[in-house]
Length: 374
Ligand code: AMP
Image (cartoon, rainbow, N blue to C red; front, top):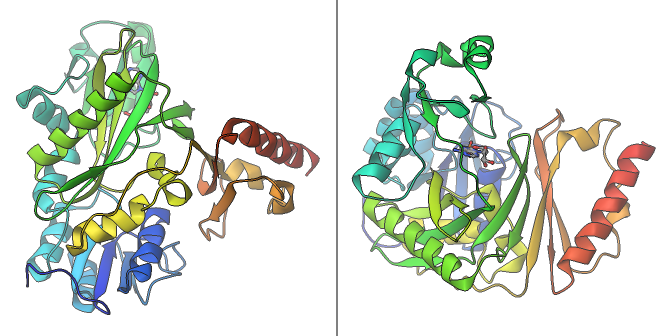
Protein backbone atom coordinates (compact mmCIF):
# COMPACT_ATOMS: atom_id res chain seq x y z
CA UNK A 1 0.00 0.00 0.00
CA UNK A 2 1.29 3.42 -0.89
CA UNK A 3 0.25 6.95 -0.21
CA UNK A 4 1.35 8.01 -3.71
CA UNK A 5 -1.02 8.63 -6.57
CA UNK A 6 -2.35 5.63 -8.45
CA UNK A 7 -0.16 5.20 -11.52
CA UNK A 8 -1.39 4.98 -15.08
CA UNK A 9 -2.26 1.41 -16.03
CA UNK A 10 -3.15 0.43 -12.44
CA UNK A 11 -6.66 -0.80 -11.65
CA UNK A 12 -9.39 1.10 -9.83
CA UNK A 13 -11.96 -1.34 -8.45
CA UNK A 14 -15.53 -0.22 -7.75
CA UNK A 15 -17.85 -1.84 -5.21
CA UNK A 16 -21.19 -1.72 -7.05
CA UNK A 17 -22.01 -1.98 -10.71
CA UNK A 18 -24.84 0.47 -11.40
CA UNK A 19 -24.85 3.55 -13.60
CA UNK A 20 -22.79 5.53 -11.10
CA UNK A 21 -20.06 2.90 -11.19
CA UNK A 22 -20.29 2.81 -14.98
CA UNK A 23 -19.71 6.54 -15.30
CA UNK A 24 -16.87 6.46 -12.74
CA UNK A 25 -15.23 3.62 -14.73
CA UNK A 26 -15.61 5.48 -18.03
CA UNK A 27 -13.98 8.57 -16.51
CA UNK A 28 -11.24 6.54 -14.82
CA UNK A 29 -10.27 5.10 -18.18
CA UNK A 30 -9.90 8.62 -19.49
CA UNK A 31 -7.28 9.11 -16.76
CA UNK A 32 -5.34 6.04 -17.90
CA UNK A 33 -6.52 3.57 -15.28
CA UNK A 34 -7.82 0.08 -15.79
CA UNK A 35 -11.10 -0.62 -14.05
CA UNK A 36 -12.92 -3.39 -12.20
CA UNK A 37 -16.41 -3.51 -10.72
CA UNK A 38 -18.40 -5.88 -8.53
CA UNK A 39 -22.11 -6.56 -8.96
CA UNK A 40 -24.48 -9.50 -8.57
CA UNK A 41 -25.71 -9.10 -12.16
CA UNK A 42 -23.26 -10.03 -14.93
CA UNK A 43 -24.85 -7.46 -17.26
CA UNK A 44 -24.94 -4.63 -14.69
CA UNK A 45 -24.19 -1.19 -16.24
CA UNK A 46 -20.63 -0.94 -14.90
CA UNK A 47 -19.70 -4.55 -15.56
CA UNK A 48 -20.32 -3.89 -19.27
CA UNK A 49 -17.54 -1.31 -19.47
CA UNK A 50 -14.78 -2.39 -17.05
CA UNK A 51 -11.63 -4.39 -17.78
CA UNK A 52 -12.30 -6.82 -14.93
CA UNK A 53 -15.98 -7.53 -14.23
CA UNK A 54 -16.49 -9.43 -10.97
CA UNK A 55 -19.86 -11.10 -10.41
CA UNK A 56 -20.99 -11.39 -6.81
CA UNK A 57 -22.93 -9.56 -4.12
CA UNK A 58 -21.44 -6.30 -2.80
CA UNK A 59 -22.52 -7.53 0.63
CA UNK A 60 -20.45 -10.73 0.41
CA UNK A 61 -16.93 -10.48 1.90
CA UNK A 62 -15.70 -13.26 -0.42
CA UNK A 63 -16.89 -11.31 -3.48
CA UNK A 64 -15.30 -8.12 -2.12
CA UNK A 65 -12.05 -10.10 -1.77
CA UNK A 66 -12.21 -11.17 -5.43
CA UNK A 67 -12.65 -7.53 -6.46
CA UNK A 68 -9.75 -6.47 -4.23
CA UNK A 69 -7.52 -9.17 -5.73
CA UNK A 70 -7.82 -7.72 -9.26
CA UNK A 71 -7.62 -4.07 -8.09
CA UNK A 72 -4.84 -1.77 -6.85
CA UNK A 73 -7.20 0.74 -5.25
CA UNK A 74 -10.86 0.51 -4.28
CA UNK A 75 -13.83 2.85 -4.21
CA UNK A 76 -17.61 2.51 -4.20
CA UNK A 77 -20.64 3.86 -5.98
CA UNK A 78 -23.17 3.09 -3.27
CA UNK A 79 -23.17 3.53 0.51
CA UNK A 80 -25.45 0.64 1.45
CA UNK A 81 -22.79 -2.08 1.50
CA UNK A 82 -22.60 -4.63 4.31
CA UNK A 83 -19.88 -3.58 6.81
CA UNK A 84 -18.21 -7.01 6.68
CA UNK A 85 -17.69 -6.72 2.90
CA UNK A 86 -16.36 -3.18 3.24
CA UNK A 87 -13.97 -4.19 6.01
CA UNK A 88 -12.70 -7.13 3.97
CA UNK A 89 -12.12 -4.87 0.94
CA UNK A 90 -10.32 -2.25 3.05
CA UNK A 91 -8.16 -4.92 4.70
CA UNK A 92 -6.77 -5.96 1.30
CA UNK A 93 -6.42 -2.69 -0.65
CA UNK A 94 -6.73 1.04 0.09
CA UNK A 95 -10.45 1.96 0.01
CA UNK A 96 -11.79 5.52 -0.36
CA UNK A 97 -14.05 6.62 1.20
CA UNK A 98 -13.13 4.74 4.39
CA UNK A 99 -15.55 2.29 6.04
CA UNK A 100 -15.72 4.71 9.02
CA UNK A 101 -17.42 7.32 6.79
CA UNK A 102 -19.92 4.78 5.56
CA UNK A 103 -20.63 3.65 9.13
CA UNK A 104 -21.93 7.15 9.92
CA UNK A 105 -23.91 7.61 6.70
CA UNK A 106 -25.44 4.17 6.21
CA UNK A 107 -28.02 4.61 8.95
CA UNK A 108 -30.24 7.71 9.00
CA UNK A 109 -30.08 7.74 12.81
CA UNK A 110 -26.27 7.79 13.03
CA UNK A 111 -26.19 10.31 10.17
CA UNK A 112 -28.55 12.64 12.06
CA UNK A 113 -26.65 12.07 15.32
CA UNK A 114 -23.45 13.10 13.53
CA UNK A 115 -25.12 16.28 12.21
CA UNK A 116 -26.44 17.06 15.70
CA UNK A 117 -23.08 16.44 17.39
CA UNK A 118 -21.32 18.79 14.99
CA UNK A 119 -24.07 21.44 15.14
CA UNK A 120 -25.04 21.21 11.46
CA UNK A 121 -28.60 22.45 10.84
CA UNK A 122 -31.32 19.85 10.30
CA UNK A 123 -35.05 19.39 10.82
CA UNK A 124 -36.44 18.14 14.16
CA UNK A 125 -36.11 14.36 14.27
CA UNK A 126 -36.08 11.32 16.53
CA UNK A 127 -35.89 7.53 16.53
CA UNK A 128 -39.17 5.65 16.02
CA UNK A 129 -39.76 1.95 16.56
CA UNK A 130 -43.55 2.30 16.28
CA UNK A 131 -46.29 4.91 15.90
CA UNK A 132 -46.19 5.36 19.68
CA UNK A 133 -42.86 7.19 19.25
CA UNK A 134 -44.26 9.82 16.86
CA UNK A 135 -44.47 13.19 18.67
CA UNK A 136 -46.93 14.93 16.31
CA UNK A 137 -48.67 14.83 12.95
CA UNK A 138 -48.14 15.37 10.09
CA UNK A 139 -44.73 13.72 10.15
CA UNK A 140 -42.40 11.87 7.79
CA UNK A 141 -41.20 8.42 8.83
CA UNK A 142 -38.15 6.92 7.13
CA UNK A 143 -36.54 3.53 7.50
CA UNK A 144 -33.11 3.94 9.07
CA UNK A 145 -31.38 1.85 6.41
CA UNK A 146 -31.88 0.86 2.79
CA UNK A 147 -34.26 3.66 1.88
CA UNK A 148 -33.57 5.59 -1.31
CA UNK A 149 -35.50 7.33 -4.10
CA UNK A 150 -38.35 7.89 -1.65
CA UNK A 151 -38.55 4.15 -0.87
CA UNK A 152 -38.95 3.08 2.75
CA UNK A 153 -40.61 6.29 3.81
CA UNK A 154 -44.14 7.43 4.58
CA UNK A 155 -45.76 10.80 5.13
CA UNK A 156 -48.29 10.30 7.95
CA UNK A 157 -51.09 12.84 8.40
CA UNK A 158 -52.80 11.34 11.46
CA UNK A 159 -52.82 8.41 13.91
CA UNK A 160 -55.25 6.65 11.55
CA UNK A 161 -52.78 7.10 8.74
CA UNK A 162 -50.04 5.67 10.96
CA UNK A 163 -52.20 2.62 11.73
CA UNK A 164 -52.81 2.08 7.99
CA UNK A 165 -49.07 2.37 7.24
CA UNK A 166 -47.87 0.28 10.20
CA UNK A 167 -45.68 -1.88 7.90
CA UNK A 168 -43.15 0.99 7.66
CA UNK A 169 -42.19 0.05 11.23
CA UNK A 170 -41.22 -3.50 10.23
CA UNK A 171 -37.66 -2.11 10.42
CA UNK A 172 -36.32 0.64 12.77
CA UNK A 173 -37.20 4.16 11.61
CA UNK A 174 -36.60 7.83 12.28
CA UNK A 175 -39.32 10.46 12.28
CA UNK A 176 -38.74 13.92 10.78
CA UNK A 177 -40.70 17.13 11.02
CA UNK A 178 -41.96 18.13 7.55
CA UNK A 179 -39.93 21.06 6.21
CA UNK A 180 -41.86 23.78 4.37
CA UNK A 181 -39.00 24.25 1.94
CA UNK A 182 -38.85 26.73 -0.91
CA UNK A 183 -36.31 24.70 -2.83
CA UNK A 184 -34.30 21.50 -2.62
CA UNK A 185 -30.65 21.95 -3.51
CA UNK A 186 -27.54 19.88 -3.48
CA UNK A 187 -23.92 20.80 -3.09
CA UNK A 188 -21.58 18.40 -4.86
CA UNK A 189 -17.96 18.53 -3.75
CA UNK A 190 -14.81 16.51 -3.85
CA UNK A 191 -12.27 16.05 -1.10
CA UNK A 192 -8.85 14.62 -1.87
CA UNK A 193 -6.59 12.43 0.22
CA UNK A 194 -4.72 15.43 1.65
CA UNK A 195 -7.92 17.27 2.55
CA UNK A 196 -7.94 19.51 -0.53
CA UNK A 197 -11.43 20.34 -1.77
CA UNK A 198 -13.32 21.51 -4.84
CA UNK A 199 -17.01 22.36 -5.03
CA UNK A 200 -19.42 22.52 -7.99
CA UNK A 201 -22.06 25.18 -8.63
CA UNK A 202 -24.95 24.42 -6.24
CA UNK A 203 -27.79 22.63 -8.05
CA UNK A 204 -31.54 22.75 -7.60
CA UNK A 205 -33.54 19.52 -7.63
CA UNK A 206 -37.14 18.69 -8.47
CA UNK A 207 -38.51 15.32 -7.33
CA UNK A 208 -41.60 13.47 -8.43
CA UNK A 209 -42.90 10.49 -6.43
CA UNK A 210 -39.72 10.63 -4.34
CA UNK A 211 -37.48 10.19 -7.42
CA UNK A 212 -35.23 12.94 -8.76
CA UNK A 213 -36.73 14.18 -11.99
CA UNK A 214 -34.66 17.25 -12.95
CA UNK A 215 -31.61 19.12 -11.73
CA UNK A 216 -30.89 22.72 -12.64
CA UNK A 217 -27.52 24.37 -12.10
CA UNK A 218 -26.87 26.91 -10.91
CA UNK A 219 -29.72 26.79 -8.37
CA UNK A 220 -32.07 29.80 -8.40
CA UNK A 221 -31.04 30.96 -4.92
CA UNK A 222 -29.33 34.19 -3.83
CA UNK A 223 -25.50 34.00 -4.09
CA UNK A 224 -25.16 34.17 -0.29
CA UNK A 225 -27.37 31.08 0.10
CA UNK A 226 -25.36 29.20 -2.55
CA UNK A 227 -22.13 30.14 -0.74
CA UNK A 228 -23.51 29.05 2.62
CA UNK A 229 -24.58 25.71 1.11
CA UNK A 230 -21.11 25.14 -0.35
CA UNK A 231 -19.44 25.96 2.97
CA UNK A 232 -21.79 23.70 4.90
CA UNK A 233 -21.11 20.80 2.53
CA UNK A 234 -17.34 21.31 2.70
CA UNK A 235 -17.43 21.39 6.50
CA UNK A 236 -19.47 18.17 6.57
CA UNK A 237 -17.04 16.40 4.23
CA UNK A 238 -14.06 17.54 6.30
CA UNK A 239 -15.58 16.55 9.64
CA UNK A 240 -16.31 13.09 8.26
CA UNK A 241 -12.77 12.76 6.87
CA UNK A 242 -14.36 11.89 3.54
CA UNK A 243 -12.26 11.19 0.43
CA UNK A 244 -13.99 11.31 -2.95
CA UNK A 245 -17.07 13.07 -4.26
CA UNK A 246 -19.89 13.77 -1.83
CA UNK A 247 -23.36 15.22 -2.29
CA UNK A 248 -25.15 17.08 0.49
CA UNK A 249 -28.88 17.52 -0.12
CA UNK A 250 -30.41 20.50 1.65
CA UNK A 251 -33.74 22.26 2.01
CA UNK A 252 -33.85 26.04 1.48
CA UNK A 253 -36.28 27.65 3.93
CA UNK A 254 -38.27 30.81 3.27
CA UNK A 255 -35.75 33.53 4.26
CA UNK A 256 -32.79 31.54 2.94
CA UNK A 257 -31.94 29.29 5.91
CA UNK A 258 -30.60 25.82 5.14
CA UNK A 259 -31.38 22.41 6.64
CA UNK A 260 -29.40 19.30 5.72
CA UNK A 261 -31.66 16.51 4.45
CA UNK A 262 -29.24 13.81 3.44
CA UNK A 263 -25.55 13.11 2.83
CA UNK A 264 -24.45 10.81 -0.01
CA UNK A 265 -20.75 9.86 0.30
CA UNK A 266 -20.38 9.27 -3.44
CA UNK A 267 -21.15 10.63 -6.87
CA UNK A 268 -24.82 11.58 -7.03
CA UNK A 269 -27.67 11.80 -9.52
CA UNK A 270 -27.95 15.54 -8.89
CA UNK A 271 -24.32 15.88 -10.07
CA UNK A 272 -24.91 14.27 -13.47
CA UNK A 273 -25.15 17.74 -15.00
CA UNK A 274 -21.41 18.17 -14.37
CA UNK A 275 -20.76 15.65 -17.17
CA UNK A 276 -21.15 18.00 -20.10
CA UNK A 277 -21.50 21.26 -18.19
CA UNK A 278 -18.34 21.40 -16.08
CA UNK A 279 -14.64 21.33 -16.88
CA UNK A 280 -14.26 18.16 -14.80
CA UNK A 281 -17.25 15.85 -14.35
CA UNK A 282 -18.11 14.55 -10.88
CA UNK A 283 -17.08 11.07 -12.11
CA UNK A 284 -13.62 12.16 -13.21
CA UNK A 285 -13.31 14.23 -10.04
CA UNK A 286 -14.14 11.21 -7.91
CA UNK A 287 -11.54 9.10 -9.71
CA UNK A 288 -9.00 11.91 -9.28
CA UNK A 289 -9.76 12.34 -5.56
CA UNK A 290 -9.51 8.66 -4.65
CA UNK A 291 -6.51 8.07 -6.90
CA UNK A 292 -4.56 10.91 -5.29
CA UNK A 293 -4.42 13.07 -8.43
CA UNK A 294 -4.92 16.84 -8.26
CA UNK A 295 -8.60 17.83 -8.31
CA UNK A 296 -9.81 19.36 -11.58
CA UNK A 297 -11.55 22.70 -12.18
CA UNK A 298 -15.29 22.69 -11.46
CA UNK A 299 -16.45 25.78 -13.34
CA UNK A 300 -19.47 25.37 -15.63
CA UNK A 301 -19.57 26.48 -19.25
CA UNK A 302 -23.15 27.72 -18.80
CA UNK A 303 -26.47 27.02 -17.12
CA UNK A 304 -27.42 23.34 -17.28
CA UNK A 305 -30.47 21.17 -16.88
CA UNK A 306 -30.46 17.41 -16.31
CA UNK A 307 -33.50 15.19 -16.84
CA UNK A 308 -33.68 11.58 -15.66
CA UNK A 309 -35.09 9.10 -18.15
CA UNK A 310 -37.14 6.58 -16.20
CA UNK A 311 -38.30 3.15 -17.32
CA UNK A 312 -41.84 4.46 -17.82
CA UNK A 313 -40.68 5.94 -21.13
CA UNK A 314 -39.85 2.42 -22.36
CA UNK A 315 -43.42 1.16 -21.84
CA UNK A 316 -43.79 0.55 -25.57
CA UNK A 317 -40.20 -0.35 -26.33
CA UNK A 318 -37.01 1.66 -26.85
CA UNK A 319 -37.82 5.35 -27.41
CA UNK A 320 -36.94 6.80 -30.81
CA UNK A 321 -34.02 9.01 -29.85
CA UNK A 322 -34.16 10.88 -33.14
CA UNK A 323 -36.89 12.90 -31.38
CA UNK A 324 -33.99 14.68 -29.67
CA UNK A 325 -32.09 15.43 -32.87
CA UNK A 326 -31.07 18.99 -33.48
CA UNK A 327 -31.52 20.29 -29.94
CA UNK A 328 -28.49 22.50 -29.30
CA UNK A 329 -26.42 21.67 -26.23
CA UNK A 330 -28.17 18.36 -25.53
CA UNK A 331 -26.26 15.19 -24.66
CA UNK A 332 -27.93 11.83 -24.09
CA UNK A 333 -26.55 9.21 -21.69
CA UNK A 334 -27.96 5.66 -21.52
CA UNK A 335 -26.88 3.15 -18.91
CA UNK A 336 -27.12 -0.12 -20.90
CA UNK A 337 -29.91 -1.63 -18.76
CA UNK A 338 -31.69 -4.33 -20.73
CA UNK A 339 -34.97 -4.30 -18.84
CA UNK A 340 -37.01 -1.20 -18.09
CA UNK A 341 -39.35 -0.98 -15.11
CA UNK A 342 -41.45 2.05 -14.15
CA UNK A 343 -39.31 4.33 -12.00
CA UNK A 344 -36.04 2.60 -12.97
CA UNK A 345 -33.30 5.04 -13.96
CA UNK A 346 -32.42 4.09 -17.55
CA UNK A 347 -30.50 7.17 -18.59
CA UNK A 348 -30.54 10.95 -18.51
CA UNK A 349 -29.94 13.89 -20.73
CA UNK A 350 -28.25 17.19 -20.06
CA UNK A 351 -28.90 20.46 -21.86
CA UNK A 352 -26.20 23.10 -21.47
CA UNK A 353 -26.27 26.71 -22.62
CA UNK A 354 -27.97 30.06 -22.16
CA UNK A 355 -31.22 28.66 -23.64
CA UNK A 356 -31.18 25.46 -21.59
CA UNK A 357 -34.74 26.09 -20.34
CA UNK A 358 -36.21 26.49 -23.82
CA UNK A 359 -34.26 23.57 -25.21
CA UNK A 360 -35.30 21.38 -22.30
CA UNK A 361 -38.95 22.27 -22.90
CA UNK A 362 -38.52 21.30 -26.57
CA UNK A 363 -36.83 18.02 -25.65
CA UNK A 364 -39.52 17.21 -23.07
CA UNK A 365 -42.36 17.98 -25.47
CA UNK A 366 -40.83 15.76 -28.12
CA UNK A 367 -40.20 12.90 -25.72
CA UNK A 368 -43.69 13.00 -24.26
CA UNK A 369 -45.20 13.15 -27.75
CA UNK A 370 -43.10 10.08 -28.50
CA UNK A 371 -44.34 8.27 -25.40
CA UNK A 372 -47.97 9.08 -26.33
CA UNK A 373 -47.49 7.92 -29.91
CA UNK A 374 -45.90 4.63 -29.02
P1 AMP B 1 -34.95 11.48 1.03
O1 AMP B 1 -34.98 10.06 0.59
O2 AMP B 1 -34.74 11.65 2.49
O3 AMP B 1 -34.04 12.33 0.22
O4 AMP B 1 -36.43 12.04 0.71
C1 AMP B 1 -36.96 12.07 -0.60
C2 AMP B 1 -37.73 13.36 -0.82
O5 AMP B 1 -38.82 13.46 0.11
C3 AMP B 1 -36.91 14.63 -0.57
O6 AMP B 1 -36.14 14.97 -1.67
C4 AMP B 1 -38.01 15.63 -0.27
O7 AMP B 1 -38.64 16.06 -1.47
C5 AMP B 1 -38.98 14.81 0.54
N1 AMP B 1 -38.66 14.93 1.99
C6 AMP B 1 -37.85 14.10 2.69
N2 AMP B 1 -37.74 14.49 3.96
C7 AMP B 1 -38.51 15.60 4.11
C8 AMP B 1 -38.83 16.47 5.19
N3 AMP B 1 -38.35 16.27 6.42
N4 AMP B 1 -39.65 17.52 4.93
C9 AMP B 1 -40.17 17.73 3.70
N5 AMP B 1 -39.93 16.94 2.64
C10 AMP B 1 -39.11 15.87 2.83
